[in-house]
Image (cartoon, rainbow, N blue to C red):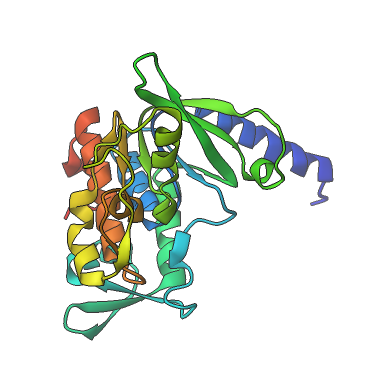
Length: 269
């Protein structure tokens, strides 16, 4: 078969165009393609809803790729083991209750399953603002190429409509910061602002992250490290069970509001 360079280019442009047009109005926009964001996107898509997952970097995975200090192994606890079992990720029990997984295999499994479930994944795209109505209720995301921001170019963005939005941007809490900047001190925290993350304490951080996974403003939820940072609790380092459980919790909360049955999900522990 003789290949045509122009046909290759046309295929990429036309298929991406179809994907982009089809994703301008969705049920949920998830900002941040780390473990919590990927987990939430997978579950919501499996429930039959349209999901966009935005990642500002080239690759999904967040901090999971590097494991601990670039040793590409991660730790999970007993409570989250069933999630990776469902994704066929190999786990080794290091000590009772401590399971070790390859970080590369874990990211690959999460990304593959999310994409295969129908998630519209957009890498190299940043959410620079939120679409709000006259009551300041969030109704979508305002997106632009990440390279536009990096080059400090004045290029206007485009808007995507959604019923719900998840801040899964990790330590930066980017969506929550947009809310504070654009709307005001309106977050559902004790001081209506980002309370800030505490120092490393895996036991404390992992024990509260699912509880911190909740609505932070009208139709906006926090998942993963964003949840702990917004509600003022500790960070946890290279143990990632809480991230997966937080993504699962955020998905369940939104699915409940959208009206789906969680029994239809593959991961339903």
